[in-house]
View (cartoon, protein in one colour):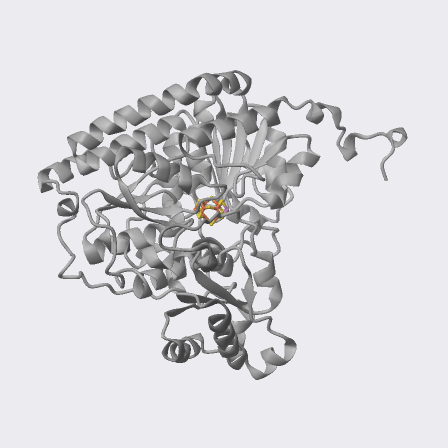
Amino acid sequence: MTVTDLNVDDMMTPYPNKVLKNRKKHIVAKTDGAASCPQIEANTRTVPGIISQRGCCYAGCKGVVVGPIKDMITITHGPIGCGYYSWGTRRNKARADDRTPPEHIFSAMCFSTDMQESDIVFGGEKKLAKMIDEVVEIFHPRAINICSTCPIGLIGDDLGAVSKAAEEKHGIPIIHYNCEGYKGVSQSAGHHIANNQIMEKMVGTGTDGPAGDRVINILGEYNIGGDGWEIERILEDIGYTVNSILTGDSAYANIKNLHSANLNLVQCHRSINYIAEMMETKYGIPWLKVNFIGVEATIATLRDVAQCFGDEDLIAQTEVVIERELAAITPELERYRSICKGKTAFTFVGGSRSHHYQYLLKDLGMEVVVAGYEFAHRDDYEGRDVIPTIKSDADSKNIPELHLEADPDMYEEPNLHLNMSKEKYDELVEAGHFATYDGMYPDMVDGGVMIDDPNHYETEELIEIFHPDLIFSGIRDKYISHKMGVPSKQLHSYDYSGPYAGFRGSIIFAKDVANALSTPAWQMITPPWDKTETEGGD
Ligand code: CFM
């Protein structure tokens, strides 16, 4: 069956009518290379009863955005399971540096109030206050995060009051997040809550940020498997000063100085676009959507960034670094490419990578025939023009918008932060420099399918219809494909591998993909449903 023959009705026959009607809106095929993306339903509630692969609001706030801040202690206020299951699984790496000595790195630890039945009945505020006292006494952190879980919202513990009292007592910032798991429709609400608090309580409070006119922040890069370090290596080689990567290997000590940057680069647009937009409003700092996944994408990104600064030295040095890095990786990449070429993939990740990895797979000669997102919004599929402001998030029903005033000491026309004329800046905007990598649809192959919030059943159906050679997903769906005899690679945690970003990362990725595609194991297994009685099995 070819991809263009996909008949969604056939695929979804077991559904009752109402469910069919709902799910059909979440799937879009690109046919005849159509330039404009059909509307896709996204960021809406999963049909109750369907086994979705989404996570919760707490996962998006604690697990994704604030958990990786290495010099803060992040307390999970709730029963132990939430803290335990979000402990160390994301592989966001951290290390000591000039500002953060090893004894100040807490991101690999798990802190939880371990709420018991009696705490739920009588309230957990005292327990939380006591825990803050304990962690301050034992670890002396610079600042503390408190993330709430579902039961906390239901019993009504006042985290704001506890944090305020503890701040006065201990003299350090204590930031609370009302990110109860049930809020919103997915992780996405948690990203937004985390962004708001970081913006309100941390950004702009520091006075010791890096000086210079080539200072950048990288937003939406979480250092999974060391990705952030590879990106930082390249950028510093070219001559930029990286103030902070949010939030991979980041520190409170640097986040408070986020406003010292001339430019914000946004790698994951889903989880941290809010901070980029809010910083533009408050400080006039421009932001650029980038992609460091893929060799060609990394090159294009580096050139875009240099163009933003418009500095001849930077532009020249960018080319020197590109040439040197390409020379170092090309022979090995070619070897893996010869194995991967012509193969197809199904990517299913959160809200950003199914798009970004298409560039790296293209470098290897592979095509993505099905791309799914757990919790993306319409703009992640269709492009930012579709829903131009953060106000239109379905999330915002749960999340009060921050009303930011422009800071008169900092706010300038965005061009001035880049030491560039307004005309030149407008020219770059016009040329699309602020819209590259916007929306997945333009990068889909003809006949390819985008699907929002796919469930276990639909994943199986799509594998049977498209027969992809490789599936990129997460731990929840990895074994679905294994059972069907199709190899898979985790794109959330990279299994135990990485980094995959930048130049050096592309080689590691290519090697992992070539290994997965060429292992003979997949031809040797017979799935249980194809086994005859005599072949055994239970
Ligand atoms: Fe952004 Fe992410 Fe992603 Fe995401 Fe995530 Fe992740 Fe992801 Mo897993 S922040 S949206 S909430 S790129 S943890 S590092 S891999 S689902 S596609």
